[in-house]
Image 1 (cartoon, rainbow, N blue to C red):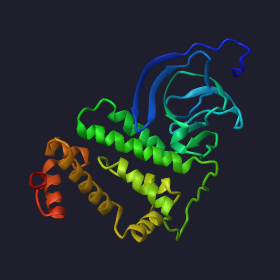
Image 2: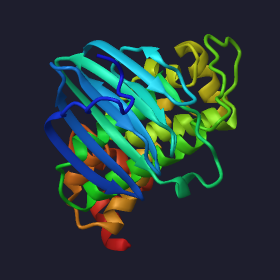
Image 3: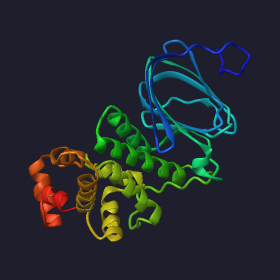
Length: 284
């Protein structure tokens, strides 16, 4: 059985679950699918499509990509497929159960910028953004809505900045390197999406192609502080926004911005702002 080229009937899809959401002009489709039988995955859309592989292993996958790579390619978790608008892509896959996220990006979101077709491209930041969105999909309340919007905005900026027709070189190691403006923005975007989580310095350094030790030095030179202190400042900044712009309780806001307990949040907030969270909310 060959990759679908229109000369045979396309195979049926065995979608087990599907969940969609629209945020900031982008459409997200989280899919779980059984591929025990050979399955055709085909795209040729008027919009750009990003597919992020989230889970599952395939035993075989053959692809045929107009103006892009073709042949055998097995996805790893975190791999990204980029299918530019009007480009034809077809794959024949077989394995067990897989999970992925399709991101629909209207061409208007990127203006005149062309996208480079990509297959099996590792993008740690995009993968983590997608996972955070998946985890927030069923959360209710103003804080959760604000967080989802923030994630989608960061994701949109990352796509526009990283996936143009001129791919940016990946530098590894980089002893003595500095964080240029582009990599500073990558770091800021990453930290923005992880405000309610423990930050993994190794992953953060990897996102800008540096060793952890080189990254810590470069971060301090660029931002004048440590990653931890920077993160605390951003958590307090977001907490201020939630205190004045939502009706979420102080306990809910404490969890939403990553503090382990409400008392830790209150103590840190007062140290940084000069008043307690409740007093700050009432004064504003």
